[in-house]
Length: 215
Image 1 (cartoon, one colour):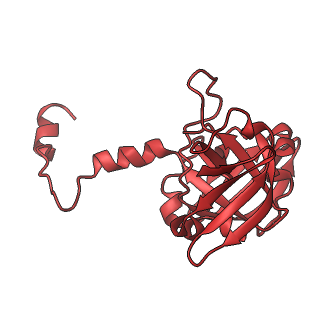
Image 2 (image 1 turned 45 degrees about the horizontal axis):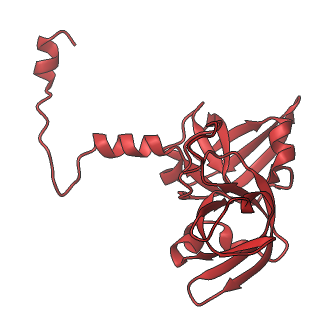
């Protein structure tokens, strides 16, 4: 589990593609402290397991499913990436609950300044937007951000200069693709409210019942 607060910007040293998977090696410093093989590190918001650990870098395997559902496949040598170690139980929880399981890829449509704030409008698919709510949380490339506006085809976030300067938002351009993870609480609520199709449940809540008790 992560918080969406980027600890460090790392640099891709190597992206070695296999037939259906890849091995990613990233130069880093801060996230290596206290890390051991088998630990989790979020790379642009995607939870990866450390499989190789060195003094100035680490390696992780990327599975076929992850390559298909994220923007990691576009990384090359020299690419910059957001890095965050898994949340410590004794640390401050300054962002929101981020699982590191990306829901989809979005495309930056517009970037504009509004006084000191910088607005990013991101296009996303309907299956992602259904969980995006105004004033709710979303992780964009692993950054915990607050949704400022939502339409039927996109959503916008308003970032303060500090966040932009400390993350790769300062490098992003219109047309760039970003990894998106919606607030997981909404997905759990939906799952609990909608019974599984294979086990239909007949509700005892009827219009007559509500009318009888004053609803």
